[in-house]
Length: 265
Image (cartoon, rainbow, N blue to C red; front, side, top):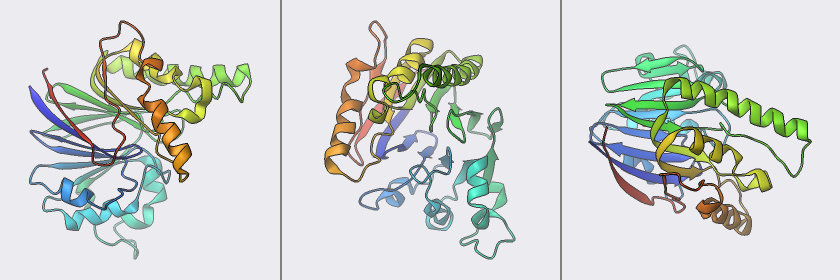
């Protein structure tokens, strides 16, 4: 078995600490600036960026190379590498602090990264960048990035809705080619989609055996009233968890809120 401590930071950012290593996904911001203290560990640290949009990527992550006691491994999407090329190219005069090329891995969909601890499968997105499936000693984590069925049913035509759903089906099929089971899935529940907000989640949950589902992508708004409405929808699990599905949903909505999970292979 493997112990997992999952800590919600903000929006799509989670820190997941295991018995073996620690993962950080899509850091954007943390309200109290405590993330460095949370992730400073002697265990191997992996920093994931699904894509370069401002609510998924903050260049501060590259400072962690000198701030953490254990130099992290960066796994970033191809578009993030282009966007941040002035920070990661060895010859750049803007590159401060230095991240060793050996600790930086740029991924395109369909590529795989492996080291002595993990295997990472980069999958596609229905927006930009990558989603990631991580195999750690036989347990599987999935961070969707901006992969979703972006079907704005209340605002767009039937053809546009079908295109959005078909695009998601295509990416879901590629995930199913690798696995039919996921231990922890982090996936968007986005109230901005209106009446179609649950389409992607329902498709994911009915297509795969998912043990733990964690909603995300609901904290991108500066208006408190709108933010609370979006959080409320993410917590209404009965609206997106299909009946007779043996999945536990964990709506983590407060910064630094954590859960502890023990997963068996």
